[in-house]
Image (cartoon, rainbow, N blue to C red; front, side, top):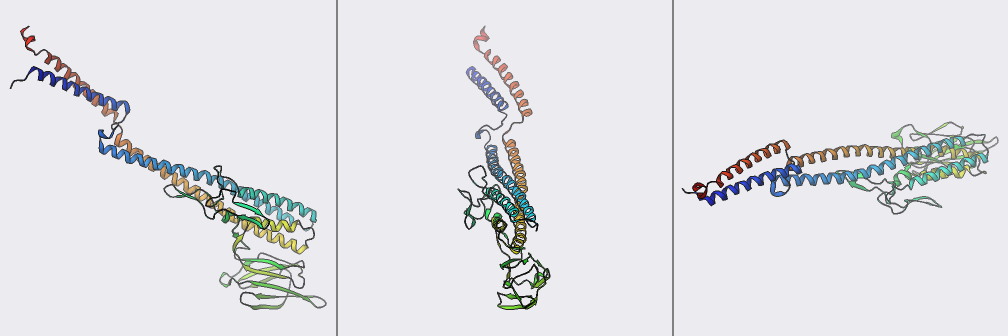
Length: 400
């Protein structure tokens, strides 16, 4: 078989060009550090890298959402911590107001202090998240969610909270209504109050002695003072059932009154017609209402001793209830922050796994690449030497 000189030249040049292109390809991979720079390099690996890049993007987006939630929850936890401190100060002020030697002017000064605490709590409830929203705006509010009206503080936000999905729902706001306006009234099971109070008697918060005997009914304790010397008696009415449970029982100040699994104490000297009520507790106690009731009585110089004692006792009870409610909300926010730590760890692990998959699909093994480049360079040099020999295989070279 005869091989033409032109064919030998063409074959040698093609080999040189191919070897040179291989060297350029390997050199390009070494420069970029990527084995797959475009889909045509390795379609399967390119598809794997693309899927991994999408996972990385999703993880980064979820991480940004989790970071936003963490920032809001950190601000919320700080606000609730300040609220608990303010309420503790309010409680100490109420205890101080219970000093029997205080004059109306001194009690009025304490009422002013409570008013200042209330204003600070109101500002805390309307605190901004720094991004145009409000920490306690619920499902969204373009204006401060709490409004101070003549009848008390109203919530104009939407109940609940905004949630974003960072692999799992994370909150971006807190339900302000539940935190500030929905503490348990009374002692959490029932609520005592003075309905008619002309004497110096006052009723305590009471306690539960037999949970299974609690009926959930409304009761009235009515006092009668008659005779000479005056004899004080009381009757207990079940307003829900329409029955009288106790009639004309002798009254002794400080002696417990047992009532359908409940125990309560009335102290002081009631006047004829004085009445106290016992009703089921509900989730309607407002932080601001609890302070307003105490402020109103302490600032009233004409308030009788019984009303002052009742206001202080009731104020301490209500402040304890709202403090527990705010503290529970703070604990819930703390649990959310702990959960966000777990979300962040999971997203970091997911992103690391995706980056590893992407690297395995498209990154270059530099040691192998250097070895391949050296082999390509050796092959190119061999092809170059072969071409130099082919150049001398012509008839003119032979004749010369």
